[in-house]
Amino acid sequence: MSEPSVLAALVAGLRGGSIEVVDLTSPLSSSTPVLRLPPEFGQTQVFTLEEISRYDDRGPAWYWNNFRSGEHTGTHFDAPNHWVTGKDLADVASVPAGRLVAPAAVLDFTAEAAKDPDFLVEVDHVRRWEAEHGPLPDGGWLLLRTGWDARSHAQEAFLNADEDGPHTPGLSPECARWVAEESPVIGLGVETVGTDAGRGHAFDPPFPCHAYLMGSDKYGLTQLQNLAALPPTGAVVVAGPLPIVSGSGSPARVLALVERS
Image (cartoon, rainbow, N blue to C red; front, side, top):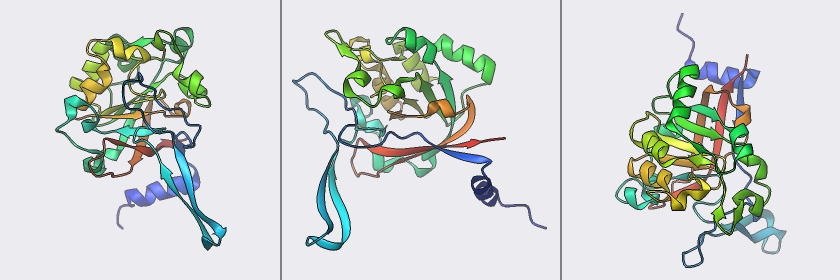
């Protein structure tokens, strides 16, 4: 008798409920928060829909839209060529499909971020997590849970900016370098508007998560939601960016497969 198929077991688990699909994606609409840069720089596009037809004389039996959006709007995938350090590396269409399905480690810093919106994760924090849960997954994602997804309903609360700039949690410059150059993960996922902390513009180098990760041929996932539904280890992330030729990134549907007892 042949061994049971791994894929058949997966389908059975999905149908039977022993494997849960958790949607990590923020809904994409005109109210989705977007990154704001200083006015001298180009700005990303707020997501907009343009109706083509809706069961009317423009198309009696069908409804559809054109849409306009920045590549880095809403829950999105950062490809290596997004940053100058990775300008000669892969565009989003060239990311190997096999890297879009990968295990995840979820590090929870919601209490720290609640006390200090500028909280920075250091290498020692990751080492302490590894001492409890085991090493970061080889070829997997490091997902940073901070509770920031609770703010995603409103632009101002999400960016949390004042006269000194935005205040959101993230990695320290040294931790960003370590994740990019020494850890076994393929990328970093966050709940905030971008992979860098709000103060990242003032770090050395500026925006170190972008500079180090992209330059190391690694990836970013941003504006994730529902990380609270994932265990520290064991979840598998399925990231689905659009394969935009020469694109630096793309809005993405990001799912997690979680085994439930």
